[in-house]
Image (cartoon, rainbow, N blue to C red):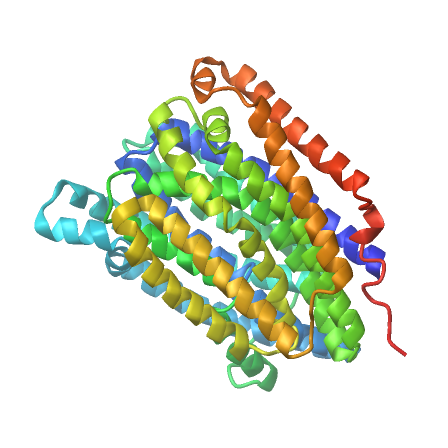
Length: 525
């Protein structure tokens, strides 16, 4: 089972890697087309809302609530009962999200006023920034239906993950990126405002994601006719678990959305700079953090059902060790290579040197919270798999309130960078609360061996940073290089850092067996 868990993590990481690469290509296309001006701000906020919903439904609250209940039904061994539960869950969810989607499309000006409060106030006052409000409200009518598609896609992905078919759901986001890129290239010339072509890319991307998963559900024998069953005990259980979960594992995403809302009240470009830096942060977060969380939740749920406490604790330990092994060097690398990365990946077209410098400041701030973002994806399932929603929700609310205070304290002196710092600080607070509660309950605690292992990773990361800083040329050199030479130089720096990190770990005695999870599911006597 442990080898299967590790293999599943690798499969999900590889599929997620494809999605993230295409996501970067998509963002390069958007950056070169729109830069960091008013049109970019409008599209990026309109795109941020469905992407926020994607994380809640496809990667967050719904999966965390649905998978433990689905695992219970699956372990009963009755295939017809399993199919009936899926039918009831899909029918109930489908009706609810259809109504919410219709309300969102019809009431898009209200949604726009809420999520673009700064633009709305400027619109009422007749300020120049207010010109963004009307196109934002109109664009939401196009992007908001993504909620319907992504909700049912999240349901399908959760079913396939529970059946240990992780690759399908992990590959699905690729289709959204393909759709946006295709619309940017082929559809945008037909629009006076090209950002609207990108909005249609979001719409069609959501539709493609849902249609893609249907054949795999059919092959697995779980493609059923949806049924309305609001009062069904199992569906009610999912509903009770899901509603508070919206504030649990997804708190970091809610904080990022709050950053965007506040950024609409700041200078033009603030939304775009935060977005581009967040996109680079999302690459390791999606590749490692979400991938590990995807495979660990069904495993933890199974251990909880079988009452194997030792295997449950070992699985969390495995997730923490793997996340730290990958997350610490990734965070440090983003911090020291922030501006070179942005210049290499996004510079060109409407995206200027100044945009790269501004976005690099927020990327450095976000990178300090990357490990915390990733650890939340491992620690929160320790509660959700036990069907304990109250604890992570309580901590999530604490962290969200703290983020609001951090934003108020830091946004005035540091602008949009202060928003990024506040988000990282609140994520770290949430991580600490989750861990100490697991420790207090006796569910999980870091052992002496794991602590030593983590110290070795910290030392290796420090030497990696030193090596990169020592050989990194002055930033002015990057302005004068072609994209090809910048890419080669960036690859060289990453290679030096990665080599230093690996060699240091080997010299310190760290081996694959230390994080391979070979003891993850060992049963207690």
